[in-house]
Length: 409
Image (cartoon, rainbow, N blue to C red):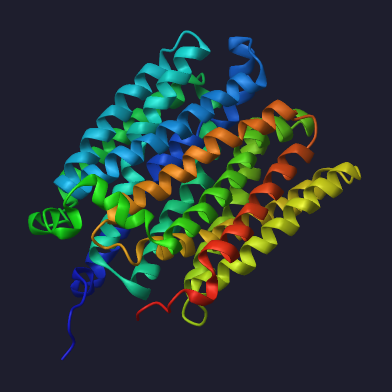
């Protein structure tokens, strides 16, 4: 007789597939919000007649909003359940998209982008919390990786779709499309997503106050170290997101459509990494996968700097960049499962802290690449190398892989 340890263990295959697809669509709202307008960044620079750094700040505003939104929505969802915060935050996203579409200057565009980030935050943090509500141990790794596969298509499709939209509409139309996507999310949640956090669990000892939930999470050494690893990895990836439109469209003269295709090829590296990591956790702990992936990130980022300064050309940047991005993909599910596995009672709070640190650090540090200049790929590669070094240090000095217990089956 099999004992159901987690609620999700009793779900049928069809029910699991429905959760994967719908929750994947929820988490994809964030990447679509961030990535769909990337091919339009040089056009925005021209239309508003401002510097590259100013345009990159609209991207920074989105990530900071995304981080703040997760800090708000995560604990809120632990207290009142998952559905209501998700619907309310997504409604904010829709209104902010329409404001961005009508923005007359870059300052108001930046403010609207910050609100878009706050609204889109709910999709990622609540979907991750819902998965943790339902699963634990290796089933949690499998579900997170399958969710990441659906979600991984978003950064592949978003810039390609954005570049295609630019062929038939001005850049403002991209934000109208994003508003429609937000409306689609609300309809899906309203019709097909059941509440995964019962009322009894919202008021138990693990959910007494916001302060106690934060204390429980932040007193866990493994969580703190893994959160730093995740934030550094994401900041390195975001340095690429913020700099690559200017490097490839400016330095290497790519069209928006060619840039979208390059972005898609690179994003396939994330999907390969995520799915490979899920299978590898059957044989090795996720902390050991991180030990290898962070080292690959460091080597790849240093290769970008060296090959760029050696004037090797496009392939000298594109090839190591692909390996850096694939290594990030290997790390994503490992960071998530190590951060959430021991915090079933505070899944929303833990997921929100993880996301807030990711997007907050990316928003603060990645614009440094724009300030250093996008006349070469070296500043981007240097920022990536710094981030990889921080990841390696946090993993070995704070997490300490040998002290992490094995995942339950």
